[in-house]
Amino acid sequence: MAKVRDGDPERLGLLYERYKRPLLGFFVGMVRDKELSEDLVQNTFVRILKYKHLFRGDGDFRTWMYHIARNVKNDHFRKNKVAHDKVEFWEDKLGGEASHAVDLQSEEEARMIAVALDKLPDDKKEILLLSKYQEKKYKEIGEILGCSEGTVKVKVFRALQELKVIYKLVEKAM
Amino acid sequence: MEMDKAKIDELVAKYNEGLCDPEELGQVERLVEEGKIQLTDLKELTKLEEHLHRLIEPTPSKQLDSRFYEMLAGQTQRVAPEQFMWSWFSSKAWFPKFSIGVSLLVAGFAGGMLIQKNAGGHEVVKLSGEVAELKEVVMLSMLEKESATDRLKAVSLSSEIEGKSNRVTEALIKTLNSDPSVNVRLAALDALQPYAKASSVREALVRSISQQDSPLVQVALADLMATLQEKSSVTELKKLLKQRSTPKEVKKRIEENIKVLI
Image (tube, chains in turn orange, brown):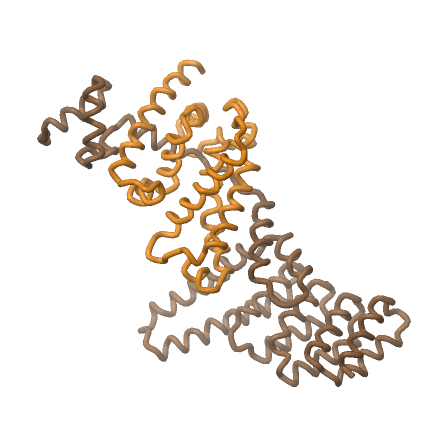
């Protein structure tokens, strides 16, 4: 990223290739709409390029990228104060991909997790998605959210606690 | 109140059994915050989190790649032919894969060389020479491929070769004159522009004018001649004007360029 900032924007292509998939996963997890999520991925990279001079270079690019991604997502929600689709349509929007699991014991389990995640409040969903895509680096997540590592752990704990409760309900219902 | 390790372990065990009351849950939360209990100690949550982490990610569409590379091209675009280059990059979105491929190849080669030899200054210079040579070989062989896309990649690769050898510029000139694809010829012309300072390249470009049958390449060459102020091209350009097959619009553009040159 430092090279992008210092006048070699083509290098952004490498970062895009590395992070487009997890970033799309983060947005899809949040907004449940693949097409919209792709717009948000694009907007994130537009913003990265626009504000490249603000990248300090002493930190991790991924952390900075998710910081920008959150702002892009929040701006989107602010501008479009509309209710999002019900969870039932989630998988349709993903073209069925959400229900595909690589190593999960069953596709059913993956589907239940996806449904339970979707029923979580946005802030809890976000912390779990950040934890997934930041590979549980709580200190970095703290930088993104502007809080301490300990606070992040508590947030993850609370979110997982709630997910556990919802998951059990979903399990019963299915 | 400080809690000793045994009590913490006991609390964790109780949590994992699902037997914590709300007050104990509060204690667990506080200990997690203080780093005295790791989230990984809480088995059921960890299992759930693992499931979450293993959910497969959606695959980005080709359109996303196109839009991104179009945006990037907007930032990095150089001189003409703008439209052609844009659509070329955006339509195929081949560049990232290709550059990663070439980078890996070069990195592998470089890595191998570094392991074999001590990386002194001399070796580094020698190594970068060898890397450039390797790119050159790859580029020349790709120019021979049947697929126009591969040949476009080859032409693009030529821009990555530092200190182009005559072999590269000659191959680009040959491509400009004889490649069956107009797009490849245009790309070759674009790749040759930085080398137009060399008289041999300029002369070859001038000679190329009469060999072109595509109006697009004719116009691109005529524009380049005007940019380079290559007066010796006027004779060749006039030949195109006399040809009945030259489209009217092209003739008009050539006339404009001739005016600039004279």
